Amino acid sequence: MVTKTGVEGKRIVDRALGRNLDYGGILCEITAAQGMGKTSTLLSLTKHTIMRHPEEKIFWREQYNAPLQIFKLGPDKYQFMVREGSNVVFRDRNKKLAHVDVNPVYFKSYKDLYELAKPGVANVVFFGKSIFWMDFITELREAGEWVNIFIDEMADVCPSTNSGALYQKMNDFSGTMGAVRRCMMNLFYNTQTVADIDWRIRKKVMMHIFMPGAIKDKRSRVTQRAIDNLDRSVTIGNEAYVDSGGVFGKVRFGDIFKPIHGLQIEAHVLPEDDA
Image (cartoon, rainbow, N blue to C red):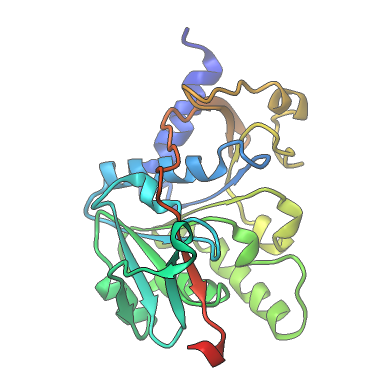
């Protein structure tokens, strides 16, 4: 049954995935309880960005020491990229963490990374240190074309607990986040606990996706009760509320990304003595 909230939800997501210079880019936050579809939603948005805009470059951030999620997009939908000297290696947990070759492309600089990235696939980037993402995203303001960034667990990149030089760096990066709309950048990130992300970054968020178990943002008109009543389904996907500019609606991300049996490849950063 078609509902008003359903129509509005689809419109908000379509606009986020569209390309309109008057509207500009988007900074979107996805929140949910553990296991309620945060990463699946990020993958779904990545998949549809590839489908709609195969000419654009996409950069994806994975977690370390955990099974890589990007494999769920399917073969030929990703490229691994590793910073030279980062000590990043790939291991198979199903084979007692034996080394595995994922045929990565190595880059030396942010400019090098951008030029080597392929359009129409998820370029999965490993810097070795998550803090480098802030510098790279800042560099992307000068790309001069539409560019897309997907961050799995933003708290690793912009932690709420920071001081000294990191505190100032976060302050500068909040300026970059404020420039997303006018720089043809789309940045989607997820988190389980919004309190783990620096408040200056979250203040710039333009669009929220609330999955089951999420805690509402105080700026949103979506109520906590409504979020708590979202439908959950392992067969057709979980419902979510989307909120942008004070307008909200309901959607269901129907893409189901199940774990791939027997595939447990992870990225690890070797200690300096082991490199």
